Length: 115
Length: 130
Image (tube, rainbow over all chains, first blue to last red; front, side):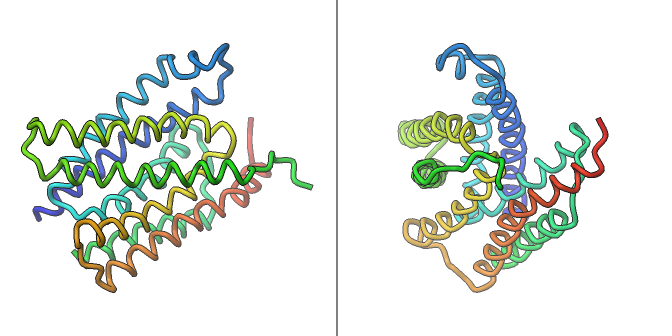
């Protein structure tokens, strides 16, 4: 139960981090006049603030989960990104992606049995 | 003929060097977790973790300009392996068969997800509405 609580903290950090990745990609798709402007714009600064907040959450999460579990739970970001794609950009999800996401979820469950 | 821009080997090398750095930031996070919150040790190690993340973030921004985000994410799966390696070597974590199996299934899912990208794009192209 204790591990589950810390793992939830790690998942929350991953969710925040995934939102920051969407912001970074949106910024990368835009034209910027200089290299400085590529980094110092509202989207990128907000994305990095969220990114570092997520990093702090992961520090607290690591108090209760093993190091190897961090990247395992990070794989949930594929689910988050697909969720954003479907709900925000109305993208379709093909059969192979559905199977892949099922594999990721199954792998996380299998790994958790080993804790 | 492929219309997409080819991703060069140096970009992959930079990506993987950066992903190794990223995995080390997790090592710092785990080390910081063992320190009392806001203690000197905590601040020092958490600072190191942030510094590594800063390097990662700056390089990542350049890498995703040169390759599709899905390709970058597919390669990010290597951090799963780094996590297992650092966990075993530095923190003496147990690597049970069930943990390895779980990690392998997640890895397979991540690779399959990225390889499904083109198929799903094609499907979307056929049925897309403006």
